[in-house]
Length: 228
Image (cartoon, rainbow, N blue to C red; front, side, top):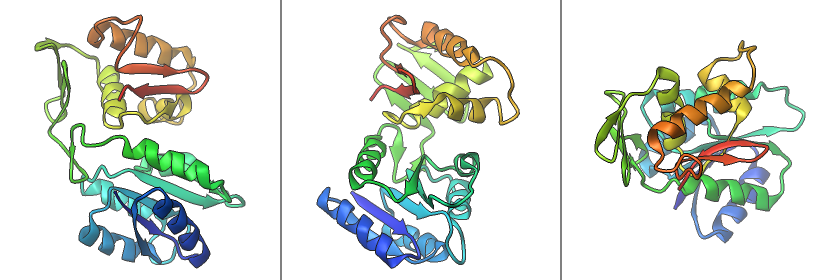
């Protein structure tokens, strides 16, 4: 797999390079956000690691520009421990994960592998596919239609939003806070049980056995993921 890191700290680029290469991946490096965007078009990486605070364009801005191009390539944001950064800004910009520096090498490696496990399920060359297919489940992104075992299923807007969010990132764990932020917004003051109710309704509609879900899986004390 090809991994692109953009960080103006040479030491950090070297550290990440060792981690990436030891895991058997190919590394490409950029020193700022502008160079990262240019290299992205040339390299077509399978995953990006972006420092938040960079010259030219910061990590948030690079995320936003790539998502505006309909790119779904997984993105990990790096931020210094002392930086006062609202993580919700990064997730709204399109980041998939966040890691605070300094970090343990194994932690970064595990997060990289988790995001890369998306594989090619419904995704081609890092860009959004019109449809996501998973055996007996088909999600038509543009038409916002879902079929289970060939039969159309009616989903509410929030149910479709949750399904699209998880299915676009197979194997990636989303915390309850991330899901609330993405579906209800940062000003949501309702009960957190709303997520439990939403996932229960979704399972009833798409799972063959809702009590033993294949797709909408609970990660206890953390959140949910789409079974990969």
